[in-house]
Length: 118
Image 1: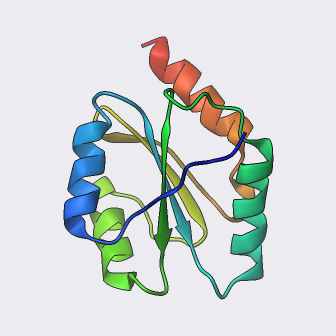
Image 2: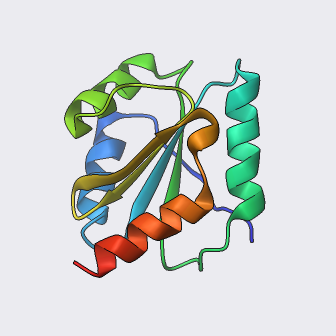
């Protein structure tokens, strides 16, 4: 399945993601366009993506173009900034945080399953 990446460019966009996460889980992928590992991590997400369109929303942040926004997100979610990084937001909270090649669709699915059981 293809991912319908929505670009994240402002703190207003991030605030909308937090609000939206109360209706649907939201994935933020922080990507460095200058990093080969980041490109590999992004490819792996896209290659393994199995989520139905209405079960999760995916957002893409270019950390080279939006460094300050990336730092703001890390601070707001109380996570260490990394790139590449995947952050899964549900009910306003970060329920999954992984970086580099630790990012997997299987773990994103597992985090959602665990969250649904609470």
